[in-house]
Length: 372
Image 1: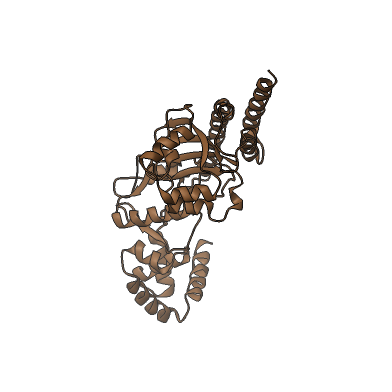
Image 2: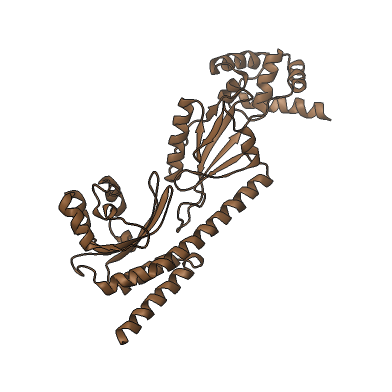
C-alpha cells in the first residue's frame, strides 16, 4: 500500500511540475529531470519532430556530452531504419519499451546508432507519443544505460501517468507562443512593416497586411505554409537564407532583389531572438520586404536643373540621396551597375566633385533649399 502511495505522490508531483513549466524559468528542465529521477533513469527526453527536422529536442543533462546532438544528426538518428526507438513509435499514449526495441533490433540493427546510445547511456528506456498531427508529433521518453538497466513496469507506469500532464503543458506553451506571434504581428502592422514571420521549421506563422499586399503570382507566394519566390534562382537563395536564419547563422550576404511587374522587392531574412524553450511555433525568423521609393519626377528635374545634369542623371543623384547603393540604383532604373558607374563619372565631372559622399551632401542642400 505504501509503495502505491509513493507512486501516486511521484506522479502527482511530476504532473504539478509540468503544469508550472510554461510559466517558470527553467521549468521544463526541472520537470524533465524530476521525471528521470522518479523513474530511476539516466535522462529524459522531450521531442517535437517536424516535417523537415526536429522543431524541438531536449535531453536532460546532454550539455555535458560533447557533440551529443551533432553526432545524432550525423548518423541520421531520426531515420527509423537507424533508430529503433523511432521505428517502435506507436499511437498516442501507447507506451513502448525495451521489448519492442528488441523486436526491431532483431530485424535490423544499425551499429553506429548502437555505439552512440551505449556511449551515452541511452540504450534502454521507454517512450510515449503525446500528440500526432499533420507535420509534427510530440514524444516523451526516459533513457537508460547499462548502469541502471532496463525499465520496469512501475517506472513505465510513472511515464504513462505523466504523459497527459506533459501534453497539457505543451498545449499551454503552444498557446503562449501563438499569443506571442499575434503580439509581434500586431506591432509590425502598427508601424506598417511588410514582414513575414517564420516558425522553427520555416513555416509561415504570421503575415502583416503590408506584406500581404506585396505577395503575387510574379513576386512571392505562400504555398503549403511555406514562403517561395516565383523566380527559381531567387527562391533557391531565399530558402538558403531562411535555413541559415533558422539555424542562427547570418553571413552578411549581398542584397537579395526580386523583380516584379510593379517594382523590385528587396528581401531581408533575419533570425529572431531565441527562447530557451520553444516548441517550434514561436517566430524564429523574419522576412522583411521593401519596395524602394522612386524619386519624384519633380525632384529629379530640380536636381538636374540645379546641378546641370540630364534628367536621367538627376534621377541617379536623387536615388543616391535616398540612401540606395549603386546596385540598388541599377536595379531600380533597370540598367547595369557599370552604366550607373559610368553615369556617376560624368556627374562627378559636371558637379566638380570626386566622391559620392560630397555629391550626396551637395544634392541634399539643393533639395533643402527648394523645400523652403
